[in-house]
Image 1 (cartoon, rainbow, N blue to C red):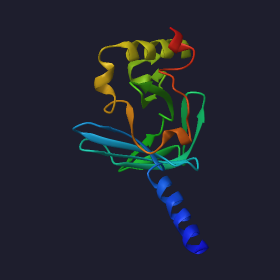
Image 2: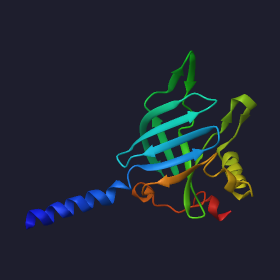
Image 3: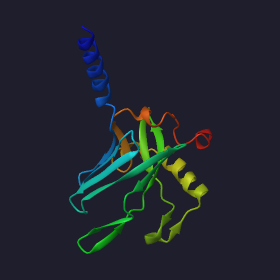
Image 4: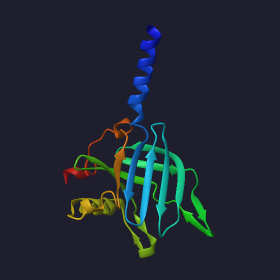
Length: 168
């Protein structure tokens, strides 16, 4: 009898964790689909399929610090055909929009447009984007939206942008 009870307990614990790990964020347009799969052991898999771009499949480790998700790719770049492609968007701001978690890629440098933002300018820009009427249409297309798994295993904050900028 004890063996049956123990077996049922182990199976129920396993089944209760299956839907919570990995934690998946995604963004999808008519031309591409990008997924970021976070495992509770601190590893991630980042994949992209695109009709116009290159396929992408990279892995690495991550940490959560305050309201930031910091990705550390296993390699600094990858090669596709004869092109060397750097991996630069490795930090994302964890936001909350209408009760759902959103990952907003952080970039301060846009060399193609000769733009270099200070951290304050970048955050003010994010506040402006978040407050705009267009923001909802980009959740899930330009910014990652949470699609499955229990994100509270790795992050418990509930900030729109951050503790400081939520007051503005």
